[in-house]
Length: 598
Ligand code: OXD
Ligand code: MN
Image 1 (cartoon, helix red, strand yellow):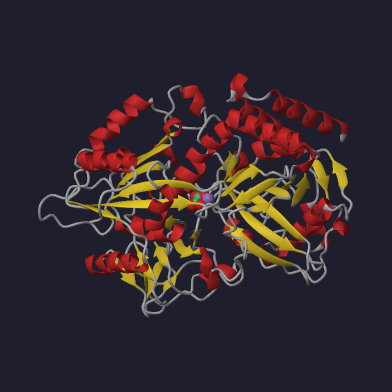
Image 2 (tube, protein in one colour):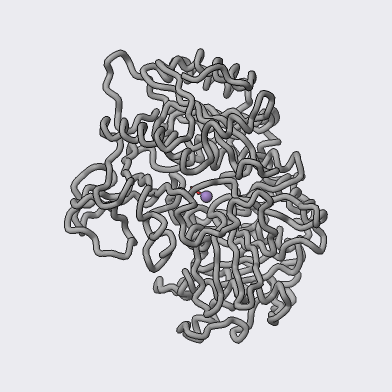
């Protein structure tokens, strides 16, 4: 046990948590490799973690079958007034939520150790970095936090005696009676799970789930939900965006921040290897961007995370060779299948299914089995430093200047391959109306269409209408230094289900058009929905895209777009008078343009 903590407020908060949760022991994490290995060894001996004979220093965990994804239905933004959480968030008044959760936390760590994890989101020393402290009773969470954030003594040193931190309380919600045997993946039933945010207090309380997005509180909870509310108050931005550097053959660097809903290929795009000769890419982040206006008036960005928590199924040497090389060793896998020779396997890995495996539930599995071997939301947790495509600037405390925003979603129809916004307000409209077919990253229906503004629907910690207003204000402040805004859709399909666009590395062809637009090197056609490339404007040398596919990818289907309007109005209608007038103006302008392009 360490001596007294210099930061009184931290010591006091930990004392309060310990008095409430009553763990058997309290352990302050130092963030060392030895600590990681010790905890992992304990989990191996309990059976919770399976070492992989075929992958050095790598482990497989199987979650409880009920605890496989984020639980949006049990996620709360608890502001004093419900209006401040807005119609897209679940809300319970802070007093009531704290009362309910205090009841659940009372004695919830009995039989367990409370781990205190001081962590930094953002490189220590960056003007943008924020310190959090997570108290958790899950050693799985500690090991994942080691990878996803910067953990330990160096954070306490940076915090000092009076530094500010965001308190993050997490329990799996499964106290142990004397002598009671632990579950391999302890968690609470769905109705007792709460993922709660008190944005006005920069406070997070999570109970009942061990799954990444619900339990690694630095990620979605702190770096998006609480940070977005804080960014609104303080005049910066916390976004669900990858950060990518593209380098032209001449050496010009373009920094792209791109927002896609969960499981829409964000990690693939973050690690893209351009197929166009001479173009290169470097990855700076795959999930979250924090951005602020620098002294030069431009928008600068850092990735607050230190690792990748990626979706495994579908990751292959075809879809994401860089990720495959990143996960060769030193990885925590969750809910993948286990092969008989001691490796992981998942659907879409690009190698034949093993003749026999143990599926994510721990059952025997053979090809032809109706259920998948890996859960569709199976994950890998891996340090960013292991990524062969990581940018030398990924930890630069000053960040990188953003040239371009890209929004996107998964739409089988209607939405073209790429569209450039007419101007900032139109770009905000594209972000605010972005939509996608739902995936397995959240528990719920898969394949239904939902509006997912800026890919922030599950992650915006305040009223989404005010968030739209914040984007408009940021554009006003950035003026002619504002990044240009584009919308992409890699997921167009023919009626027979065939993909229209090859995707993956070939997406660089769209990114090249975007970069050429930024520097005024290529033309575009003005359409009712924005600027689109003409077929000849895209560099398609070396890729076979049938002319009729290309025509469809770049077609603006006026009738289909008219059909979108009622849904956009319904979507905006939920915000009532709080929706900025400038977005109403955008709907009207779109209607008028659609009428003119009859
Ligand atoms: C994620 C998500 O885990 O968006 O990144 O769900
Ligand atoms: Mn995400």
